[in-house]
Length: 313
Image: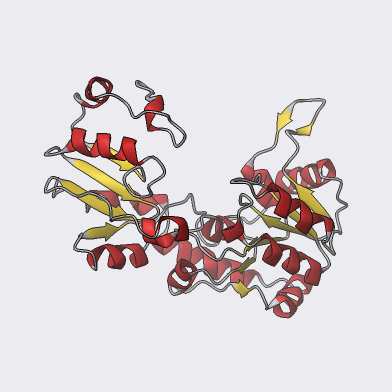
């Protein structure tokens, strides 16, 4: 980074000054504002940035909107300007903005998607999977359900635990508890009817200081679950496809929007169907999902999708 403005952070006591904003932004031909003016986590900083960008080309990238979170329901919509373009990560948000008089374009999140038909595995990948699972204390034949999210009420940890319990699997929650959710998470883990892993080891092999990555987490698991009640997008929905893992997904609204592209996923209450698939895996399902993701969510097509929102600026 060339400029760091602590006043833009969520917990900042004061917003950045006009001078600091001008110093950081004045040489820019285009400013991309990532969610700062969308969700009111630092309203003073959002106002300062909006003032600094008035009349200048800017792209406001909206991950979340105030009315999509109960605690922010009374806040106004994002600011707007004739020189700004608004981009959402789902059609639901685009339509909700349109209903409030703000025109936006949807550009879905994009991912590195293997081409359908590409080699699904290798001896090196199999060895890596075994090594990661050993670092977690798992044997080769134990089932592992991965929930690659933080722990918050809307992440529905209880739903993820239920999936693992019904599959006779170990449940692995990758992210930490936030926003005071720690006591509730502890209670859920204490009463869980399945083995639970929280967080991740820092290394796969302490002898070599080999770091564990998110790709390793997907490689090690047998099932991915995303039981959330709300997500602006839910990256694990597509990441699970890219890593050729079946997905048990929750009923959040944007999940239905993504599923409409043609993905074959499992609902949280379809564990019998998911268990049957695990006992006799059908690569056709994984290849089908890869083809859908490749057609609609690949970084290969992202430059063109971004270009579509730039001419107006």
